[in-house]
Each structure stands twice: as C-alpha cells, then as structure tokens.
Length: 307
Image (cartoon, rainbow, N blue to C red):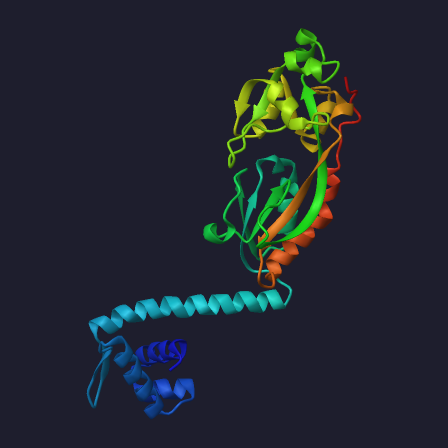
C-alpha cells in the first residue's frame, strides 16, 4: 500500500466519522476504505479506531497518530504548492545562501533579488568558513578564489582586484611605502582564514607567499570587514577588495599605495550541490547575480590619487 495514500485515507476517515462518508469524499468504496485502514493498523501494529455497528471513534493511539498525519499532509501540500508556483514562474520557499564577509557591498543586489521575487524567503549566512553545503542545508554558496570541491556545480560571477590602502593620517605619520621592500617597515593589518587558520597572502610581486611572510602583522582579525575599519582609523596598511575601498578613496578617507604591485584578481563563483538539476530558485538567484554583481566587482578607486 502507498503509505502516503494510506495516511490520507486515515485522516479522511477521522474527519468524516465513518468509512462510508470517507469513501464518498474520496471517491472510493467503503470496502476499499475499510481494507486500507486494516492494512495500516496491521503495519503499525496498533488499533487506530474503536468500531461497532453504530459508531467509529479514535483510540488514544489513533488520536496521537492523527496529529502527526495532519502535519505530514500539510507539509506535502505546501511542497506541492511551492513546486506549482515555481513552474508557473513565481518562486516560493526558502533559499539558504552562504556568503563571504567581504560581500557587504553586494547587499543591495540581494535585496533587489528579493524585491523581484516577493514570494521567496532569503536566508543569508555571512562567514568566511567553507561550509559543508549538504550537511548544513545550504542551497547556494558564494566562494572567492580557487574551488576545491569537484562535487559542486559552479558558475563564475566575476572577478575583483585587491589593493593596499591606508588612511592619510597613517601616511602622514609613517610615509607611503615606495616599493615592496619598503613595505616591511610598515604596520600591516592582516586577516586570518577561518578554515585554514593561515594569515591572508597579499598579492605582492612574483612570490606573494614569501613576501607576505615578511610583513609585520601588527593587527590580525578573523573578520575581514574589521580590516577596513582599522585602516580608516589610521592603524596601518590593509589589503582589501577594491570594491570595498573605492568609495572611501573617492572621498579622500583612504589612499591606495603601491598600486602597480597588486595587479592580480580573485574570482567570485556561485556553487551548489551537483548531481541533479538545480531547483528554479537556485537557477534564478545565480542568474541574477551573474547579471548584477560584475559592475560592483569592477568598481575601482581610480578617482582617488594612488600614492
């Protein structure tokens, strides 16, 4: 017996108060309804109804089981409504997304996506940790840099440049570095990767890892956004995404240093579990980002005067 169909018959009998009334509502015979309930009781090894020739009532176990069955049937109905809405073009349900901490300037894109799909719930989890998407229940993750999990499907969303920035107050006190070797004497603001526990590697010259190891890390955080706050406060030199810093550079609150030494870019990608066709809300979200993120990623602070 189809278990879901059996549960549906059981709920209908409980609501109707008799096999005959339930049969009429379901378009079945009373005999078929009775046999379905008997098979269900046999599978569960419990009696669900008290029966006699004149009445039908739930047992204590039947009443408890009814509450669970109602919840199951409602969940199934909600899933069917969600899928029907998706096929009709209106996205429904909840979309859980893991996004990196550097994504603050992307928030307006997320809000615009929600505005375009009013029936959708969007849950964003901000972290630099590489999440286990299946284990933690994420449908999409935005990743920066090289992708290591070949089980995930991917779509490139764009790239951005990282720049070295410092506040005018810091540069007035310490001067601007004139070359990469000169950077060694400066106070550097560094971030530590939440997954690897390693300090970030700055895009310096032909051997970034070696040069980064020489830097004096006077201030280290595991929350990338704090780097920008510290740089604005004059604490030292930070390496941040250019789209983060560009507005502050234009306003004169930060200056780009050693601009010619940090020309590399980092990729931004969307990933989602592979092995099946992406659901409509995932496809719509990734497509929306592929259209609207590149202009933000490409923003630069060129209106400011690099030092």
